[in-house]
Length: 147
Image (cartoon, rainbow, N blue to C red; front, side):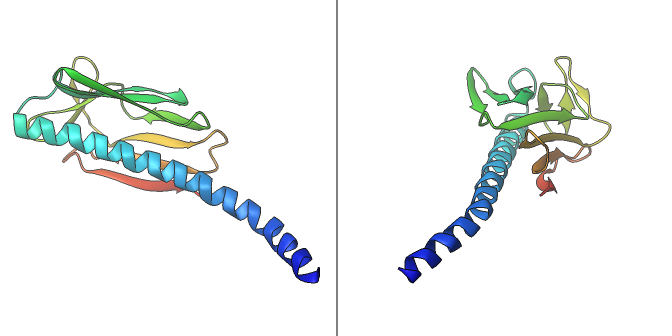
């Protein structure tokens, strides 16, 4: 009976930690998945020597945000969990790349002057990752901004 009581007490103490871990995994997974999709568009733009309007990503920011990856005639939409929020920093959608892999923004593509980011996190912004695209070479990275 004492052992059962101890197990219950220890389980109750571990639950908040487990909940935070699950939230962090969801946010990190969403960031890595978006990073891979951005790299796919960049790679297609380089190998096919074509950017917008053939290869690009459109973003819809907000709670449960979406991104649509356009690869030629195909379009695939990725959706965040409804508990996650997406915001765009430093650029306007869509995001595309030129034949050298350099990023550009907007429906009439203009080169990025500064790095741009897509922030993914919980509604309170206490846990957040930044998927950043470098303005010069188009390097795509995922970094925790709030943990």
